[in-house]
Amino acid sequence: FAKVASILRASHALDFTKFYNWSKVALEKMWGVPDDLSSVTSLPSLQNLVADHATETIIIARMCGVPRVLRRAMYELLRSEEFGRPLSNSGSVGEKAKGSNGIGEGISNVDYQRLIKARETLSSLWM
Image 1 (spheres, rainbow, N blue to C red):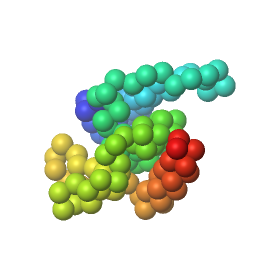
Image 2: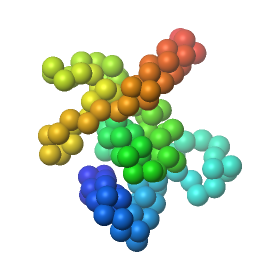
Image 3: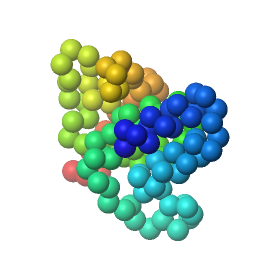
Image 4: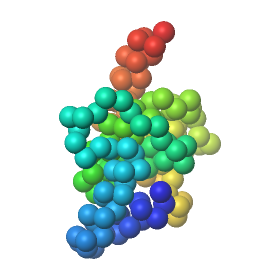
């Protein structure tokens, strides 16, 4: 995940179309996004490694224009037991994501509010 995310961020920032397109498709495949969205009948299972990067994927998808992974990444973040739990002193899972360089980046307030509302709705349906 880390390599694809790094290539996506760099190629987007530097406008390297060939690498951007490759990394975009690779990220979509990691998250199980089908080529034809009308043929989706169930969600393919994800490797835990990818599911653990849901917050970072949301940030990268918004920043680099990869909207097709947003729905699945948000769903996996909502399903995680860590969503909303405090992290040290920096906020909660879903509010902050630490990059490998230690610089904190947060998902937008709008996305966070959407996730909270969806979690409340899904919790009432799951109960």
